[in-house]
Image (tube, rainbow, N blue to C red; front, side, top):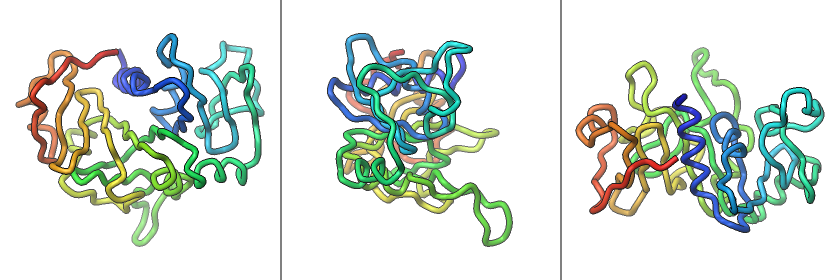
Amino acid sequence: MDPKEMIARRAAKELSNGEIVNLGFGIPNAVANYVPEGVEVLLEAENGALVFGGAPKLGADDPDIGNAGGLPITMIPGSACFDLATSFCIIRGGHVNTTILGALEVDQEGNIANWATPVAPGKWSPGMGGAMDLVSGAKKVIATLIHTVKGNPKILKKCQLPLTGKGCVSKIITEKCVFEVTPQGLMLTELAEGVTVDELRSCTEAEFYVAPTVTHYQL
């Protein structure tokens, strides 16, 4: 299975009945396709959509209706589209229960960097977007990311890129494991099939401790 699909499927397991859940750009957008059966959530996109489903079938998409990444979504009974001002009233007003965000880096203090990469001295791309509002307005922040890039760890002792938010992440989900952010640091709670704790330490710069019971990564 593709690592990004693994992460999206695992992140979908975090959803609970009745939640308003914001899905960010990248991996999180795919979570809409894997909402567990029997779980009813109100998915929200920062560009102005509330209550929608997964990706439509080929040919059934509407080019005027998309998620935060511009990809088509399925409108379902109860769906609503509105302007950015209304969307950010929902976010800044504290009405979002959970936001699932992509990340460039996260660290053992629960900091997240997900908006900027250097393109020239003093210049960054692509731009902050709505992430800074989501990390402060949502009650729970889940970071999703590929564990390493070209062998370089993305879960660090301290983020190196400009921060989106400080101490806001409660859970980190990669294709290798799940960490919870606790006052004592990162706690390993789940491992993907075939991944060992020693292997995980070798590709994770951040320090972490192992929960008394570590379960298998459930998809």
